[in-house]
Length: 406
Image (cartoon, rainbow, N blue to C red; front, side):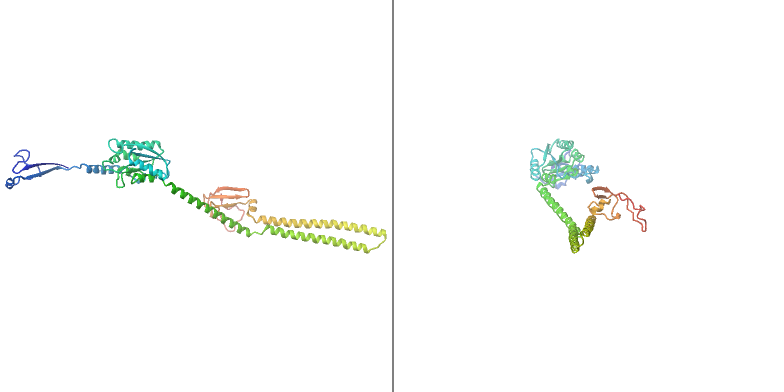
């Protein structure tokens, strides 16, 4: 605010001569009473115009610049990007001699050590804004760092470089995510609005840039333990399911044992029958006392009958053994047919969804779903195309009316 003022003693004329009159807004000379007062002065202030100066002028300029840049969309939330979770390199744009860079380096070392590139700049005074904008553009050319623009606290004049338009436009034009950490938590500059993320302090910016390594290790160990427990539980459930299915099938060893016992019993009975018959024939021959010729004839006949009986007995034994072996083979093939893998060998396949659950109907298959086909010699992946159709009632099974599933 600019003002013009003058002083006059009692009875004295204002500046500009005794005949000059005060400008608009001034009052006429006091009455004669003031002329009798000695040792006393009066002041008169004439306001011609009001102007902002000092901090008030900076705030007005800041507000006008903020509105102009916001109208261009430089502060829109839609253009802000997410920070990388664990960057390989972190860039810092700040003074190399202040406490800020030491705080950032110390905090990053404590949380998760990363490679840090420092771009030294002047953070206040003449040329500071141009250096900061050039540093942001330089990190974009490197394209290998997440930059942090940082400065300690200060007055509005000290932080003014971060309100300059060249700095704000450089931050908005950055192709890599940018963190602004200027001043204290209560200090808000225009680069805070243009950056992808604002940190209340430089130390907080370091905490935002990298996670805590110990927390990551603990979480990784927790997830590893949970994953192992899930696999063990899944294997136990599948084993119990297979055991339950196995209990429903007849035991192959029991069926083979029963058949083997029957075969052994029949073999023993056959041997006893043969020995008994031969013994009876010998006794019959012994009771006969024919003449030598007739006896020789009878002996030859008996020998022939015995040979024929032996042949028939061998045939009967082999036939019985073949029959029992065929029954045992039939039982083994029946046992093998109970397994679904035997069905696969006959040209069928087991269809499973992406969760390894069997698909039992065409209606359960959605178009585009991924499927797993298990054949007798391996597996193959497939994807459903088309939409399954229901089979009409009374339609011939071989009329090909089913819609293609794969």
